[in-house]
Image 1: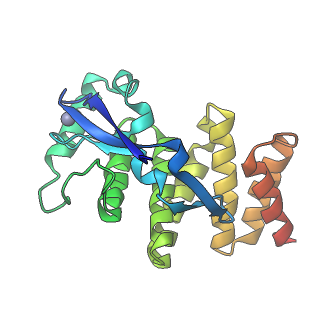
Image 2: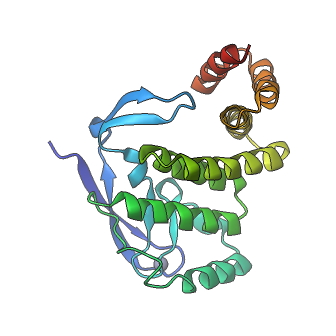
Amino acid sequence: MANFYKEITTCPICKTEFTYAKIMSSAIKVKSYDQDLKPNYVDYNPLMFSIITCTNCKFTYNEKDKDKIKNNISPKKFELINKYLSNITEEDIFKIDNSENKSPEFYKQQLVMGSEIYSILKKPFEVAKLLLKLAWHYRDIDDERRELKILNNVLKISTMYFEEAYTDDDTIFALFYSGYISYRFGNLNDAARYLDRLNSKYKNARSPYIRASKELRGELK
Ligand SMILES: [Zn+2]
């Protein structure tokens, strides 16, 4: 049975049509989760196919946003994005590849470009989520120094924008990862404070983050 199928979309910046691979849900199998709920997959990593890049202008964005992202691009942001994209040279980028054969190196570049673009779009939680995926990429290749450096940026965004979270999902994300990343840096008092705040605010929630948060809090005692 096929594990991927092709989709076609139109770039919201330059209007070029391009195709990309989508993974079939039947091809996604989770082997285990790390303490911060990083999923470890059997065979394919579907996160690699959650981000796409225009083959013409290099605009890079989450596949889930393909229909609505244009609503966030004001003329001013359009100009800033074009300026950013025009500064990406051939040496900066591997071959653009939205196929099922995408390399982890190109996926890493997509996460970096995507985080810059969502930062221009003033979407801090999207930036934090892309950076978290980048940290996970470094964890996968056992580069802890870079993983921690990127996690530190996720922590900064989470603590800076926590008050601006619109949704419970964003609030849970900010508090959980502030707790987890503080824990990774050995700042156990900070970790306990963030996790306690999360656990008391969402006492009855069935979110997997709340379960993971309670487990992690138990380790800090
Ligand atoms: Zn484009």
